[in-house]
Amino acid sequence: MTDKNNTHTKKIFTNVALVGGGSYPQPGEISLSHNGVLFLDELPEFKREVLEVMRQPLEDREVTISRAKFTVTYPSSFMLVASMNPSPGGYFNDPDAPVTSSPAEMQRYLSKISGPLLDRIDIHIEVTPVPFEKLSEDRKSESSVEIRKRVTEARVIQTKRFSESDSVHYNAQMNTKQIRKYCVLDDASKTLLKTAMERLNLSARAYDRILKVSRTIADLEGSEDVNGSHISEAIQYRSLDREGWLG
Image 1 (cartoon, helix red, strand yellow):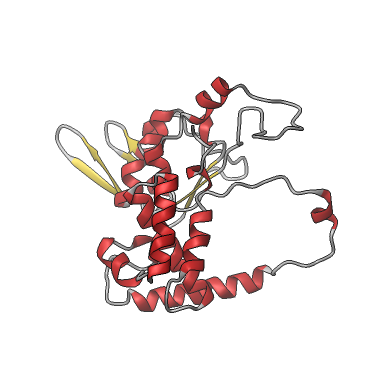
Image 2 (cartoon, helix red, strand yellow; image 1 turned 30 degrees about the vertical axis):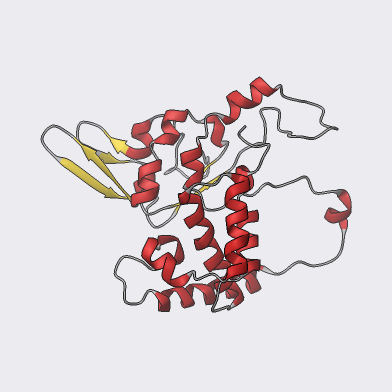
């Protein structure tokens, strides 16, 4: 992670820098980002073993560092945001691209990001090039003020939903029991999700992630129930699970 305007952030090339460690264990970037955002730019440029150490902290929201005489546990409830180019040359499946990458180069580039790590990321969005007509049109999009209002209302809904829990405060923190309670699907939605699971060969963890995101989409709409449109939208937010990505 690099940011010349922020002296706290730094380049992360080692497991210790990310997770923490040393003779007298100090917290790493994932603990320094506790209750905040950890942004990793150019994700495949990190060493695979560095990325893999995030798997358990993303699941448990804490990291434990063991030494011969003692063990230290640091909190690591952070929001992971990462970006990447679709290929080493910056283009992917673009017939008009000035630079193309061979299948072998693509495989080496994308193999640094493992399936288990992707499973722990709720949303994968593919950002396609914006044509000139879209850039130059005068139509106004939804304002940030309106979006913030909608998000704030959704967070209030979640705060009330989990008011009796000491450890869960929003949808992303739900355990399996809570997912089954608050993400009840009708038959049509179950069929839609089953089809997606089979076609995309999704894991059980991805299944739970889709349900959590669906619950949040429903909250943003002010809907009490999760329906097929929410499930469909959540599935669309898993671009890297589709054929053509990561082999």
